[in-house]
Image (cartoon, rainbow, N blue to C red; front, side):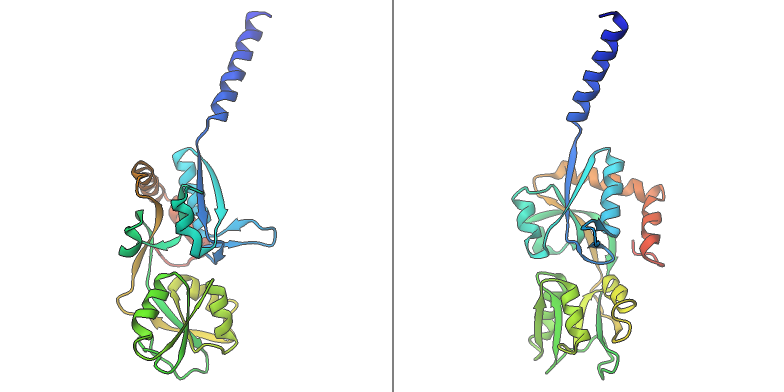
Length: 250
């Protein structure tokens, strides 16, 4: 074997070893929260969260593996080390911070309320007394509904996904749905446009949606923060956001 062939072979081996050792970041999202995360007819994940996750991986120069996980199991599976991070429009609440850590925010959202178009409920600050209000289980909106609507005499109904809550609103099985503003707005302007309307934001509920990691993974959290700052600064974030929203959600 001549020197040129030996050199080429050595380079190939080094490249193969490097590729085999390339870092992979496994990220979970829900897959049932359009336009932030959803699954298409080919079972492929899409949405704002998915695009942000991919952009962060690219910025960090790691391979990105994104998996779908049902919402109620998303924190337990993170703690069980089934993936490294969660990019799923998760609000960084004080209660969640007892179990997991969060990056800086990558968008902010208030809670909003949707009702049927012919409803006599016109104020998002209503307490839904003697009415039924739906919310996604294990979410910040579920906590708000339980803390504010339940004690006021409302019947609070929880659903595995926001889509199921919205479907019951469209069918007249609940009087209202409380949810994060942007997915509720997207639904009200598409699938729910003939039946329902948003009556406004709930005062004092604007909160940070952030990336979740395990508490011991502080180095990863800092890398994600750095990458997030960089994609905001270079315009990548704005480019992604404009695919889904005509306004600034950051």
